[in-house]
Amino acid sequence: MVDTTAVQVRPLSIEGAYEFTPAQHGDDRGRFLEWFKAPVFRDLVGHDLDLAQANCSVSAAGVLRGIHFSDVPPGQAKYVMCVRGAALDVAVDLRVGSPTFGHWDRVLLDDVDRRQIYLAEGLGHAFMALEDDTTIVYLCSTGYAPDREHGVDPLDPAIGIEWPTVGRDGAPILSHGLGC
Image (cartoon, rainbow, N blue to C red; front, side, top):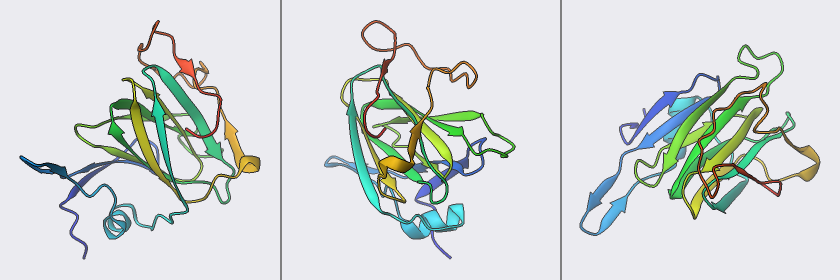
């Protein structure tokens, strides 16, 4: 049995999406936390996260990245954490035939609580930076493959994600480049 007391996990409303909140240990030197531990992840989620790539994204307040997803199979699972600033991170169910197809759920990621979000293969991923220099890191189960990568408009009213009003003029700054 794996000791999972170092992390709290909450399933989101979409199957295959979870929020993780790690225990943080602090003193006058600063803080320490285990932001990903394979045996704990496996025990809580029920499978391993194969790691093929690690990404880092730095964004200004109001930048909206996503909704990105990869063809399934193989798809791309992501384990995401904010190491600086704050972001509203969103999972969107894009799996045709899923009972929650088209639904979304969100997690506030920040450098205080250090919550993380796990998104299984087939789920779309997007986030909006709530502060300048928001830095997001994420572990990916497969590497970037441009021919398998796709995007959905994060402002699509049919999906209806409730994005906050932040940034220079309150309108999101859409990212149309590589990655989230």
